[in-house]
Length: 405
Image (cartoon, rainbow, N blue to C red; front, side, top):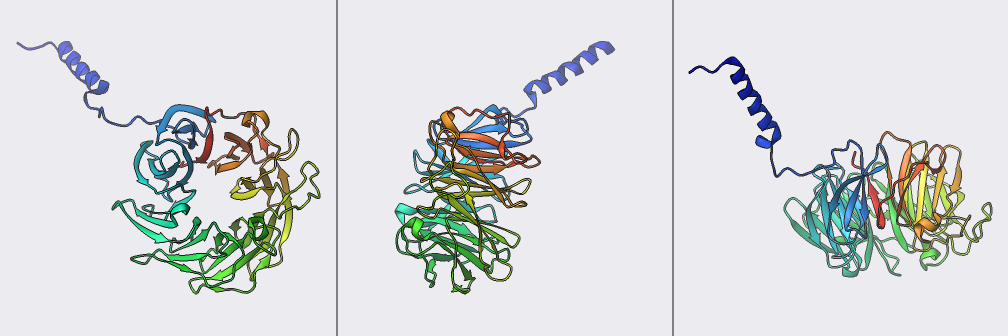
């Protein structure tokens, strides 16, 4: 018997409705936030990455569950994965930014605070101080190689990923060079005199490295300085250039910014703090010119980010002295156009007396920078060098922040 036209139409509509309600979908597909602009914030207390809508500055209900105690993070160059160190188990977790799930992990012998991908977004280098090892991890093959570097705490890679410099946390005054293109990489001690080297910045063409000699701030002698090294020759390109302090740096164009805290140095322009740190500005276009220095917050500077509106964010931790209630915190914002520094006030009671800066991320297309300060995520307006009106409340203790979008 022929069905009437209206009956056929009902059957077609019913089949379409059934397909739309899951008949043709994948029930195992991961649930994601579907946000167009995101920031991942490691939460040490909750054991997860909080996902923040970085367009509206709101916390999403979706989280990425990790191993216990997530802290420092590092994003791959292609922004498809994020490495997260989890202190509860000494593991390096891998997070897929597309699926918003943990996609793998590497068990370490001890804690790490310095790790990164090479430019292939597949090969990972990790410094494990208490094991005296730099671990090379091929995440594709799942294989690892241990490279011996005594007491290694900090590692830095060149722009082209061909070189890695490794720095021990001890009084040896040594620095090491690793050629990542070797089949079996080894660490070679750089035959140059250093003074508590802790960090380096590579020139844009990777033919030089500017090594930060921490000096007296790290228990060395004399003064802090910057030593230029020729690569891959591993020779000194002239004498070290003295600077007030040198624990971290950033190169933009031909200008090298170097931050540090000279011991027992009284503040000159900022009377809210008994001692201050220093930001040095050096021209590297023809060697290392004499620095011009500016007063910033004190502490051990180990975070630096160039944000919108020519604002250089400099953060410190460990030894940052905070004056309450209206004194200095552990963050400074330097206007590279006007050469003026704003030392940000402490984040007071909401941070429980803690002000260490442990993470920073610029947000693409916006004039803001996300800063993790005293365990809280703060949003700074780069037009005013101050907190914007709308802030984000992540429950727990935030540690680091990255933005993949």
